[in-house]
Structure formats: C-alpha cells, structure tokens
Amino acid sequence: MAAKQKYYVVWVGRKPGVYASWADCQEQINKFDEAKFKSYETKAAAEVAYKEGWKKHWGSGKTAGSAGSFKPKAIAAAVDSTEEVDYDSISVDVGTNGNPGPVEYKGVDTRTGEVIFAKGPIRKGTNNLGEFLAIVHGLAYLQKIGSDKTVYSDSVNALKWVKQKAVSSTLPRDESTQEIWDLVDRAIHWLKTNSYKNKVAKWQTKQWGEIKADYGRK
View: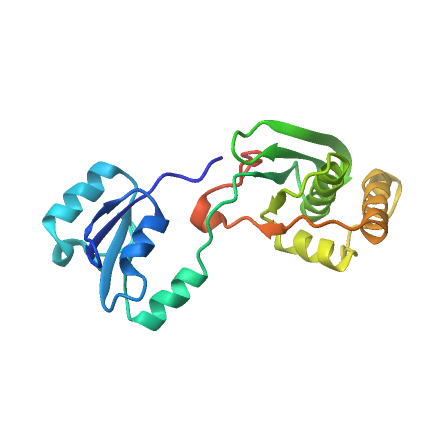
C-alpha cells in the first residue's frame, strides 16, 4: 500500500502556508527558530487550520496530525532522520499464515506496485526467514538484469541477516521445514559468493505507510 498523502501547515517559518510534501515544508522550517508546523490528512483540513492560526491547532494533540516547534538544533536532527522514498526501486514483503506456517513472498515495483517476482507458498517457515529470502531474491534478480536499484524491506531482522550473510532462527530443521531451509541455505551461499552495489534499505512504515508489497494480512 502506498504512503498516504499528507499536507503540511507552516504557521511560523520562512514562508507560512500549506505544503503538499514534507520536503517543501522542511525548506520553510529547517534552522528557523521556533518554527510551528503540523501535518494533516487532507488539504481541506490543512487550509482550515492555516486560516484559524497556530494558537488553535498547534500542540493540540496528534489526532488531526503531527505538530512540531523546534529550535535550530532540534529541527536539524529531525531533518536528518527524515528520508524520501526512492520510487525507482523494488519493495519486498512476506505473507504468512501462522508463524511458523506457510510462507510466500513477492517483490514489486515501488512506484507502480507491479509484481516483479513471487514465490510460494512454501510449506512451513517464519516471517523473518521469508523476508530474508525476499531480499536476497530481489538482489539476485537485480544483479541478473544489471540494475543498481534499491531494495526495500520493512524487516529489521532480515536486513541484519542479509548484512551478516547469516540467519539466526529457532525454526527446527526437519522434514516439514526442509523446503524453506534449503532456500535459506542457497540464499546464504549466494550472498557469500556474489557482490552487489544495490542499497538494501529499511522501509519507514511510520512515515510512508505500509510497504508497497504488503499482503494486507495484519
């Protein structure tokens, strides 16, 4: 699912107004002492809030949006922690039925949501192992077509395992899990015998919404 559109009201900043992107909002508040701003889910709500002024809306809670007023150092830190989505990328995610349970995963075009590859269902595995396989599948796919696109995943554990070229899972190795463990072993071997320049990045769900490859099973 794509990140929801948000609108940003800047009451106190370089150029007060309503902005349709966080990047535009940042230009008005970055290093601006005592900047006052707040995000809203709709343009109409943002325009009303702007007209009514910050005293009525700023700091009034998080139900209508998120508000901020930062000193220069604080706003710099906030800007540093904010990323923009690289839409020229692929996003991966896993779908499970129980954990452990049947596992499937897919990779999609982050911009369009078009499915690029999919695997499963695999008889029995875990969410984290599926996420790990999805990332490596994405890297192998991009290497095959000669692409340096970024791979996004929302799994901290899987990202760590890819970096370490090893997994840490309590899933037993038995007949019921042989399929997924065979795939994991192959993925680890691929990581150890191949190099890649692709960025493997964390999808920032809180800022961007659900990852585009999400199965919607939460």
